[in-house]
Image (cartoon, rainbow, N blue to C red):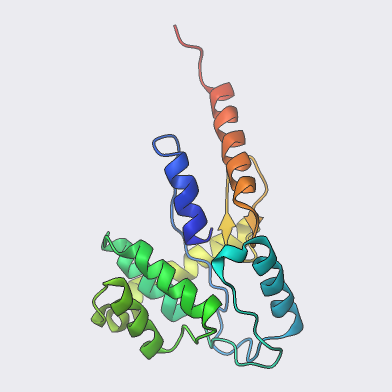
Length: 192
């Protein structure tokens, strides 16, 4: 799920749930979407309507689309694996670059700018791109997400419910998580 929304519900459900960050590649093949098309623009418009506070920029049909989401995901995975305290800031920078600035988040210069602005060492950009283990894990996590029915970002899997994908109100996440907690209570053995 989008970083800000994830952090909101993580805080609200702190100690009651465990969130696991997994990779989903919005553009897994280099250049698979050369330009913004009507489909993507319509989803961006919808996201902007649902969450105007996020400041989504609306691209024009035909504008260049980021070549791939691999570079940004690999950087975020590396920072997450290092348990770097600036992961949230990096996620915010990457979100801003992609969705407010319409920047190509596969461009190493854009990633370095995001890293520096977030307080992450810029050399982590190249280290992430060169890490074969990260690439393999990203492939595996992406395939697993597709098998679970995730088809977009943000995505949330809650046991016992269908996947939640796309820009949805944070209250939908809350209700899904409350449902999961209530089911967990039903499955728990009675206390003596």
